[in-house]
Amino acid sequence: MRRNLMIGGALSALMVLAALVSFVWTPFAHTAMDIPAKLQPPNGTHWLGTDHFGRDILSMIMVGARTSIAVAFVAVGIGVGLGVPLGLWAAARQGGWVDEIIMRGNDLIFAFPSLVIAILITAIFGAGAVNAIIAIGIFNIPVFARVTRGGALPLWAREFILAARVAGKGAARISVEHILPNLANLLIVQATIQFSLGILAEAALSYVGLGAQPPTPSWGRMLADAQTLVSIAPHMALVPGFAIILTVLGLNLLGDGLRDALDPRLREART
Amino acid sequence: MLRYTLKRLLSLLISLAIASLVIFAVIEVAPGDPASFMLGMNAQEDTLAALRAELGLDQSKFQRYLTWVTGMMQGDFGTSYQYRTPVAGMIADRLWVSLPLALYALLLSTAIAFPAGIYAAARRGKPGDMGVMGATQLGVAIPNFWFAMMLVLIFAINLRWFSAGGFTGWDKGVFAALKSLTLPAIALALPQAAILARVMRSALLDVLGEDFMRTARAKGLSRGQALRRHGLRNAMIPVLTILGLQFSFLLAGGIIIEQVFYLPGLGRLIFQSISARDLIVVESVTMLLVFAVIMVNFAVDLAYAAVDPRLRART
Image 1 (cartoon, helix red, strand yellow):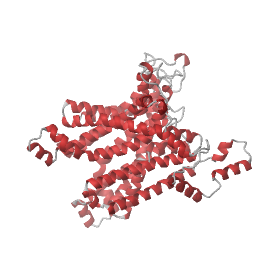
Image 2 (spheres, one colour; image 1 turned 90 degrees about the vertical axis):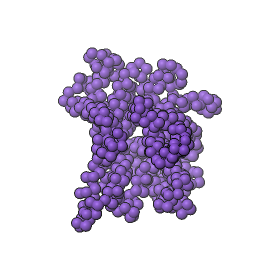
Image 3 (tube, one colour; image 1 turned 135 degrees about the horizontal axis):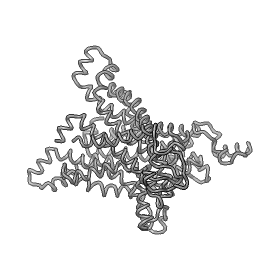
Image 4 (cartoon, helix red, strand yellow; image 1 turned 60 degrees about the vertical axis):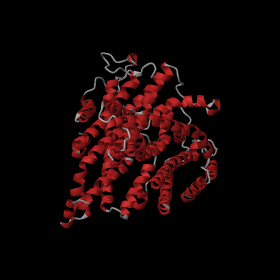
């Protein structure tokens, strides 16, 4: 079953490509207003139509992809950077007080309604991409800590870890040299899933006006602009919506595909 | 069981204490003084001081924290800076929208997800399964606020079956009130249903491979009978966990959907309070939501332990 991997990979690559190409070329300048040409449905000149200021929607989608990718990517980076070491540490001290504190801390963060806290953080410290990243990133930390710990625990009971201990390696060195490489697959799959959740969260935050601020285009804010005009210019809502859906769908399929491809046991179980 | 319950209760109390400290701290570092925000730029210094004293803002941080926490334990959530009314009353009003909305969405998501998940598991690997799984992939990828906009476009603007937003209120009759919550509930339920259907399917598939299912078939039950009598019951454990989590998510997750439909619920209350710097309301509503999530998790944990003695032994 490589179909998920192919479709997911293609959709994800398309989004990354759109973001990269936007640095050197977009059909129009994404901030260029052309009021006489406002609210045009998709046509030969403006492939995906124009918005209420006559801005080219395709150009805005391409530049908006940069925002989405950047926010989600750094937020996943925060989760991996802090969550994975915490998870490794907890697993190395399984049952001890370090493990207990880290896991209870995890439960605590999970108990917070993430969107409410994200809104709280961005509202108090100011709306903008950086605070959105922090707000989304914080909730990635317990996810990666838990996945890392869960994956690491069974490894600690394996012979090759015993061998490493006999060879005199300490817990920290074993975690980095032997446990971490064996968790790479698991973490790559989880990162893909968190990436897609990050895209959704960024869209939600910028939809309520707490994400990237104008003139930086973002898919969520394009949807907010479209809301009052949805009956006369539905393409304004449809295009950013499809951009988000296809990106998230692509990343989720990619995650599923990677899991199947990277885990031979699953492949056997499926056939 | 008693020892387990006590242990979980202790960790529940610690969680609540830390959560309240974190929320209090976040609100404390928020820039801006509520008193000067309420009285505007030209307020006299002595008026400001009087208002600060009235709001209790002149007390030490520690004292304010204690007042807040002990007040909440007695059902006193403080007084709104903006409206000068008890926050508890404001929350109670909004709960009449948010709670039914969350329950409605939960009901819809269960009604969609259970049959879909069971169907997919029974048809594993066949086109029916693939169809359901494809639909769930799409369901988790659609942002619920975008879906809400599409529902408004189709069912409110074009077909005119529902109003595009607002809440009629329960005094206009249960049917009218439920009708104004229908589109928001559908929008909220969609991604939840997709997740729940996937969990249902994989939980059932896990159970179907068990020895006792083969025994059930061997003693003469049909596939459907075995699935209903032995499969479903055992698959319910992971499904119930997700269901518990989803309820608290729906309660808090309505925040965006309430914005789309202009519903006067808890989410909108938080939003309005944030923009009006009415921080005591934000603080108390956030704490209430966290409390709800922690309590639901606690109840789910206890329910497990009651059902499955192995969990008790593990602690």
